[in-house]
Image: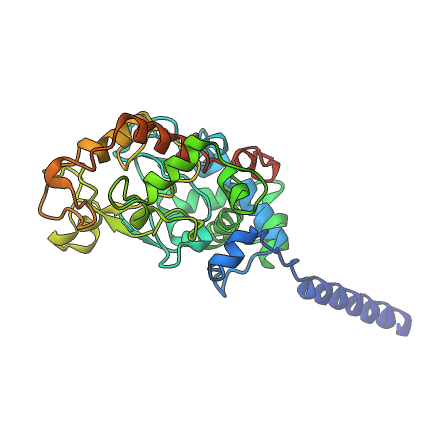
Length: 353
């Protein structure tokens, strides 16, 4: 009898120790590879205290980003509309959801998101934080058209995911909050900072005369006057991450920021996208109306349209635009293409596992 009691006591002690060992497991911190220009010219990236980056969380988020179980019919993933080869944007003007329905906006590229300091995402700033942004596409009826309850259940029944969530978050019980936290962790690792122009600023290469001239056009308030919204050599994000009416329309079918704030003064305003990686992210603008960079440049040169909320930075709207010469346009395009980061779109850490 005493032997049996000793055996049972030892068994439960071992089980208790095993449980404590599992509870004590801590995910390994993930350290972002921050480009030197970012460290020199920007403040630290935004990493929420309640969702720190870990190696296990990032790996799980990457797997989920490419996971088709997140859609209602298991046919689409986040990457379906945010293709790594297109700098995590969509080459189609409007992405097509699982039911064959098209959206009304072009899929924004995804990179350097951890430096969006006001944390307003989407073209209209409708979502605060990357975690919240990840909720909407899954349940949107014209996108992935699923319910989070069903998605969580599919992942819960999967042979791998409960263990992966246990490693990343300390629990094998899967829910939408943890799913979106993991996806947000992966998205914060999508850093683009090694374009030709970055290398030029680091003293590693030189620009052609056309590229250098194009940069001067970009920075010249009497010519391109682009830097106010899209950054400069002192802002490696190449965007102010703010919202502007850039003279696309006189009347608005899409109110943009105005639909979110309810303020008519915000009608027709959309987030300034980064002009990094333009070689990969066509078509351009919130509605993908411009298929080429030439069309974009022509818009600012002679295609501006006046409206009551036109941005004051569109100083020459009364003349139709900044009126660039043919050479200025060609040089400006040459410079803009130096901001494309081929290493980023070919990074194996960002590809489908």
